Image (cartoon, rainbow, N blue to C red):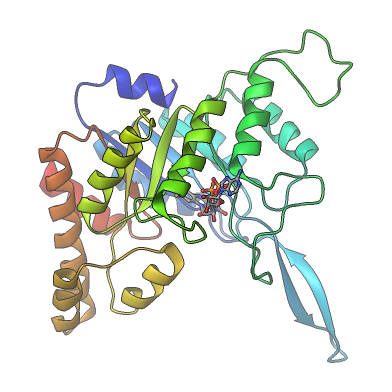
Length: 317
Ligand code: FAD
């Protein structure tokens, strides 16, 4: 079922998760071990991230260096199929522009359609590890809006090969990313929302947000989006912050603020367990507030921390 239908038809709050494919060499069992306890809370859908290949410098036996391409976390499409098969839950693959030609994207979309996948999250992706700024594939897309355009074209039966007439129409529900504290490259919030609106006008159906720790940013974002004409559902992305190191890494990576009270409590915690407890309490406090404000879906970035999410859900429902 499409995310938009799930949102429209569910009267209760929807729970959903995002997971990462395991690092290469691990089995699919690591995904099941991660998800099994969480399935008690009947997620309506599970997102699976996509990770582009990276160029890394490898030392040869003779001590000379060579650039090699590695993909540390392959398997997004296979994991989606496995999740749908095992848990009978909608799985949403992330699709990124970075590292892909348009032809490769089209073929990936055909695979997804044949697997019965009805939802995709269309993203630009970040700069590659060895790049300062995002550089598109020479035959690929520069912005997520270009990817949205390609998915919509396929939904209309338009393939890259112009001689395909009466092409089969796919029927993807398209999600896109939004940033309650602005995307780090955007000059200001309104400009960022202007480009978000373009993605919606081109055919995206809903927005999933970047993680945030201060709900006020999320509420203000919805308000400003509405004022600027973005009226599709905006799903809040929630992640537990559970150790002191993350107080500096998370704001840098995700361009998000950690509120003073949360920071102070974390700094006071003396042990790893105490830090995790502070992070759990903060997430719980965020979720209770979102529920109080009748936000119809809570989307959790589980990122290796399923126990924290489980403990939060246990106290909420
Ligand atoms: P875009 O919408 O293309 O925006 C990128 C920047 O360009 C913004 O500053 C925007 O304001 C600006 N912009 C947009 N369109 C235009 C235009 N036409 N002209 C000029 N400026 C424009 N990354 C991964 O690699 N894999 C994942 O699985 C993944 N999952 C994610 C899930 C969520 C919910 C979120 C919020 C992010 C995820 N990301 C993932 C990270 C994401 O790819 C990065 O944040 C990336 O830097 C931007 O992606 P976007 O889709 O928002 O890009």
